[in-house]
Image (cartoon, rainbow, N blue to C red; front, side, top):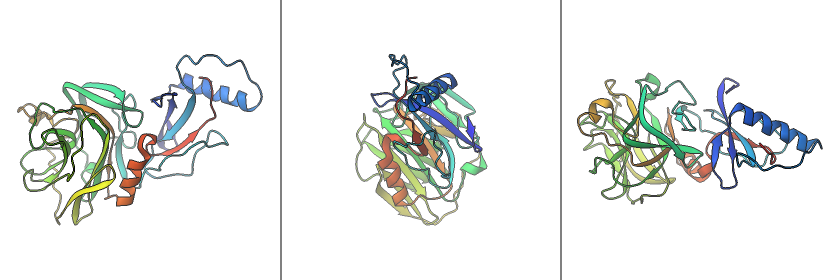
Length: 306
């Protein structure tokens, strides 16, 4: 739904900590039941058919507005999304961009599974998510970031491995975040794939969620993993984004896929964001520290039966 001109999604969280998006009827029942409990109009507690014990709403916004509350009691809040958020693919049952209109033009073999924040996506054989060319994604200063769980090698087990988010992954004018199973390292590509890259100093094992970010502030490209700086390259350049290629999540563009280098992600991808500026170290650390609560203004109703 839209609230104040921005997309808002309502989530439930069960006792196991798993969140999923609510539909309108579930939201209405939870709201009415909460009002009843607050004003003394109680009814016998029934077993929750959907296994939900809390209702929370998350405003997927680029700039924090005053907190929106459904209740006078706020149980918890999460990190506001940093300024400059251009597009965000949160994968709560949809591949849509929840901030802007950069929705996929095509996708294949996409499944919704448990992510770091609510749901994420898993790609099957031949899977991909293609994002059409858009000028507001091609920024001279930027940050790319996502939560990912690598589950091992993909179809191209080489020095570049599997794609998280990218545009290209060809000889020049390539931009991407990847993870390679050959040595369990993340790679940030920002031009020539052989000379303009930063590789993480440390290794990051498969089977666990990691937060990865790549940024450029006009003078230095930086790679972060789990909130910590993992490498950088000082370089002043004009970023040239090849308009012949789409942005992609979890794979390479169609022309490269068809040449035998799909670089399909093996694992889970969640909370993919593109910013039009380089986030500060402290902002990236805060996103990592927020973990499963994610970004956005959040309010929580008192326990209610849905």
